[in-house]
Length: 314
Image 1 (cartoon, rainbow, N blue to C red):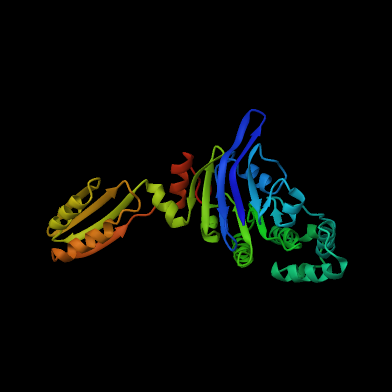
Image 2: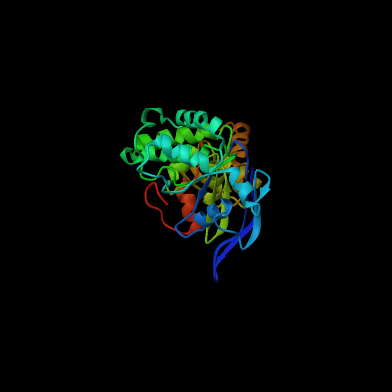
């Protein structure tokens, strides 16, 4: 549904995004991560036709970016600070947005009512926007971005400034929306991205550093596979593993009959656990622990970007 191919953007002589390629399928939530200045906002502005790419292209629902009017019909965009006319009540504001999208008067009111229901706005539909909490203003922004029933939603920091209860509500709303739409979501709150997204991509210096599910990124975060093993009578087991994998390194210590070991291999997809299990069975050893070590998303972010992260943020 969103296909980017070698997207590149210069600001004068400064390179902001370089050869960025990725694909987001219908029904998928893709997280966009990166440190400040990584090119996240520039990428979103190109996809929403606010900025033209210097080179490369992208298709939104099969429509190329150079057909920008048609592309915008397929996109719902929620900037970090959702624009709204704060002196209007919610219904009047949504009515204005709907007219700007060219929605026919005959169906506009029904569409407003439908989006108010989806976003939980029925209780505040007649209140002025400047009287609403930050969470409800975000909901108004989401409702406005979906009035024209776009195929793709592009959300820039949709949970910024929200309290924990509001964050959970917006997360659940995004997951419901993604059942029928494609969602590209940018956020600095790493645990929130991990909870809300099916896949994530990390960019730094305008370049794609990694893309995949949380589990796939975790494997990349170590730069290899790490396996923790505890065995009773395990010397022969570790010898078999060392013979099976030329590049494996094994750090072990013994306490009586118990052998504790950490196995490391440069290939993150290597099947060391299966080999350990089979060797334990073959040598009649008692396997007490067999635990792969996975990296936290914060660890992956640090490794891919070289930037330290605060707790829960990047």
